[in-house]
Length: 158
Length: 439
Image (cartoon, rainbow over all chains, first blue to last red; front, side):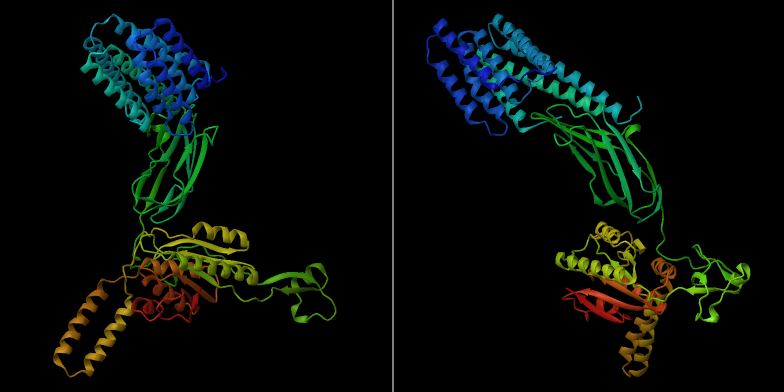
């Protein structure tokens, strides 16, 4: 099923609205930091339209905003992550079909779980070790799958 | 799987964020790093799924012009590939060629991106096996890439392999013993009876030559019939083109001039004699034979296909002919008889010994017999030989010798600026009736 492509402008407007709402509602200690970082993200977003590997520049510009928002309220940082991911995926035209929107929703769900895990942690070490374990598991499974896949198509006897 | 520049940058960011989070014990930085990592893994999973879909959809159909060939024969290979190209992905496919095969021209790879929406492509190329044996096309290599990842897979399962090419060996020298019987000799070619040369028969008209009356037809139909004999026309020349070796430097200007000169000669032959015959060789290797082609466009099209430096299966390495060695020996004997200097006589004697040992080892090259067999299949008065005279040119002398043996005239066409008096060139041109340059 083909869905209309939501351009990165839509996600950016949502991000602007979210950040402004958070700044007014939460009244952080330094109220100018987040809007300034939002402006930085906007500048990079609109000046790199013709650049190659634009996704990387957008992520680099958006990460300080995510960190600044997370430092005050982790859920606000998570919202910024979702919008940033939406901007990148829209820029790559990877939000055109129902399956792609489902993948985006899965990403949001996975990051929600990660954020919840971080929220209940007091220090970095334990969640970092859990993450490292999960990564090692995924890599091991993937190596095994890749081996079986290549074996099938290179004509090796099972 | 490899990361593209963008994914490498993101990976570096993740490592940097994790390091900062660990050192500063900051959960906000950890969130940024871990969500970025989750995104990267998501993209990886998506890419891997699409890559597997692309690989699973590949079908390969490969066909050879001939399944059994001799070493050095050039043959055409057609490979048709269909696959489903996933979204946001570029896929390229390349042939895995067996060892001992040289690609003469054509494409052995194809890209399936946005240009080919259906994901179907065909590539055609020509190969020359340089060693003998059984060779199997062992599949294809598929490379897929998107904005973040690149992966390749060798597809060599049963459905991607084949067909098998059987390459028979080709000897460099002719067998010394021929199959002789009393009164006849075996030949390795088909022979047909010659016709009487009567073009048509028609009724007799008053004034016709009475010697032309066909009495059998006249008796059969009870009416006078006369024979109409075929007209006489000069025989068209044979054009022999010596293509340069791919491994030797080839002057581009001279080659394009030679191509123009050959095209002009073919056009002239077709216009004047109604057909043209072209023999393409490269060193002591016969590559292709365009026999009595009447269609000029087809001749030129075949020439366009072949006109490029080619790989040579056999090299002569400045090989001297037996008759040349004998000539050298006779010259040494004359020189030795006429000189009173004993040291020079000793030197000439040792040189003669060397020539005699070379003469014993030297055999008749198979190339000579191939040229002779080719020339004996049709009638020709004169031969035009085009060559750039680069690298080893000893095969040109063999060609000229064979042509002269059959009492044909040889006209050599050489590039402008060639020093005709230099040693290998002058030796190769021995026996040629005329030498002209093309420019």
